[in-house]
Amino acid sequence: MNTSSVVRRVLLVLLLLALAAGGVWWLTRPKPVAVVLKPVERGVVESTVVNTRAGTVEACQRTKLSTILGGRIEVLAVKEGDRVKKGQLLMKLWNDDQKAQQFLAEKQRASSIQRVTEVCAAAESAEREARRQTDLRAKGYISEAREDAARTDAQVRRAACDTAKSDVGQADARIQVTRAEQGRTVLYAPFDGTVAKIVGELGEYSTPSPPGVQTPPAIDLIDESCLYVNAPMDEVDAPKIKVGMPVRVSLDALPKQPLKGRVKRIAPYVSAVEKQARTVDVEVDFELPATGRILVGYSADVEVVLDSRPNVLRIPTAALIDGRKVLMLNATTGKLEERRVKVGTANWEYSEIIEGLTDGEHIVTSLEREGVKVDAHATVLDAKTPTDAKAK
Image 1 (tube, helix red, strand yellow):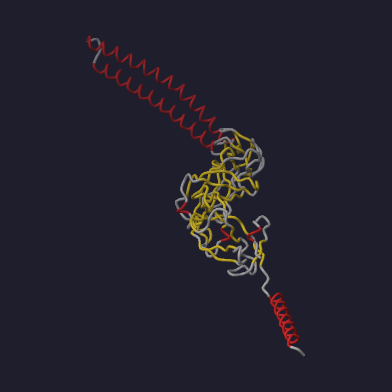
Image 2 (cartoon, helix red, strand yellow):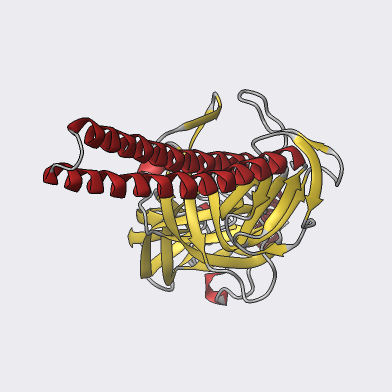
C-alpha cells in the first residue's frame, strides 16, 4: 500500500470521526428557549393603592325610621320603591285615644277662654268702682273703710282674671302635649328620597326598637341623588392617602367602566373587623355614569392614585428580577444577558426606569417560562420583534 493511499484513509477516518462528533453535539446540544420580548416604551406610570376588601356604594342620606311608640298600623301611605318628598306622610299608627285627649284639652281651653272673658270683665268693673270710691273718699263723702273694701275687691277680681288666663295657658300646654304624643305614632319623610323597604302591613302591630334590642326599622328611606363609596384600606397604606386625591372606582355591576372620583373623607380610626385585617375606611365621591343606574349596596373597588408620572420610560413590572434587574437577548450570541436598572415610581402593571435602559430596547417579559435564565440560548416568540434580535 502506497503512502498516498494511507493518507487518504486516515483523512477519511478523521472526517468520519468529525462528522460523528458533530452529530453527537447536534443531538445533545441544549435547545433554545422561546422568549417574549417587549420594547421599552414611554407612557404614564402611577403609584396607587387599592382597598383590601370590597367597598360598598352608600347613600349620602339614608335613615331607618321607626315610631317612638308601638301600635297597630292604621295608615300605610307608601309602598316599596315609591319616591317621596320631604314632610310627606309615610305611616301612622292607631291613636284615637290621643285624639280624644286633644279634643278634651281643646274643649277645656275654650271653656277657659270664656271664663277669662267673664272674670276679667268683672275685674275691670271692680277697678273702675275702686277709682270712683277713691274720688269720693278724697271729697269726704265716704269713709276710708269703704274705699279699702272697694280697692280690695278690685284686687281680688284682678287676681281671678290672671288665674283664668293662666288656665288658658295650661290648656294650650295640654293640647301641645297631646299633639306631641300623636307625633310619636306618625312617620314623615325627613328628606326627598326612595322607600327602600317597609317592615309591616296595614293592621299589623309595629314595634319600636328598645335600647339594646336590635329590631328591623319600619321604613328604610334612601336619597339616591347623592352616592359615595366606602372602601376599607390597609392600615399600612392609609397614611399615604390624602383628601382630594384622584380615584378610579370599579363596580362589578358595570365592568370595564371605571368611574373617576376623589377622596372625600378618611376615617380617624382603625377598624379591626378581623384580628389580622386592620383597615381604615375611606369615603370617595365619584362621577355617575351617563347610562346605567347605580344602586345603593353595589360592591366597588377603589384605586387611589398617590402619584402620576407622565411620559417616562416604563416596562412591565412583571419583567423585573428582584426589583432591580432585567433579562435581554444578545443578538450576536443568541444568549440571555442580565442588566441592572434603577426603578422609580411603580405599580403592579408598570415600573418607571430611571437608569439602565433606553427607549426602543427590548427586554424579556416571559420570565415564567421554563429555562429562561442568564446565559440560556433563546429564540424570539413575539413576531413583532425585529428579526436581527433572533438567536442564530
